[in-house]
Image (cartoon, rainbow, N blue to C red; front, side, top):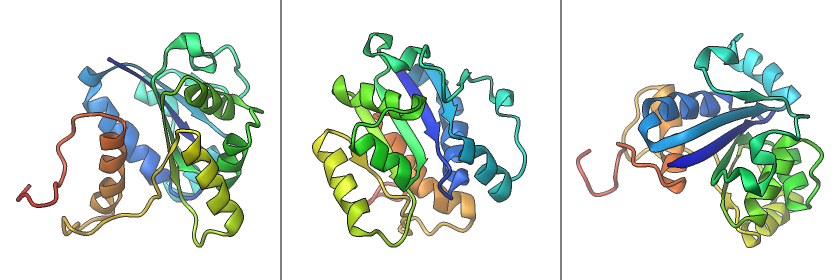
Length: 187
């Protein structure tokens, strides 16, 4: 059973995190632990893009970004998957350069050092050379860069369906079994 931490940063794209958490809660037979950590800016951006939310309503343990006693702040916590969604370029830069100044960056550092799955759903356009170099560094360190770039093969007809083309890809990358559009099938 997977032990998963989801981190939400202040990049635009709160709907990606919302849809990921919603889908993870529906496949709760595929994970044993799910935890959440948010940056300060994540709260502000979420409210601006989606509206007010009480994150406690999901029934997921939420850790303060300064809580270095969180179980996923150490390799002995055995969390095997971390998804940073959306991942700001500032967070990406701190992870890529080993700056562990909050729980999000510390947890990402732990996941990388333990050779576990780190998926960063970057949400920025266009990329500058610093962004690209940081993505390269993170990829070379074992992380997965999954840009929040939707696909349209499935002919989505709503914002949620467009977002789900990215979220389903993230779930696939994390090793979850999800029903999703598959190229070459009629699904």
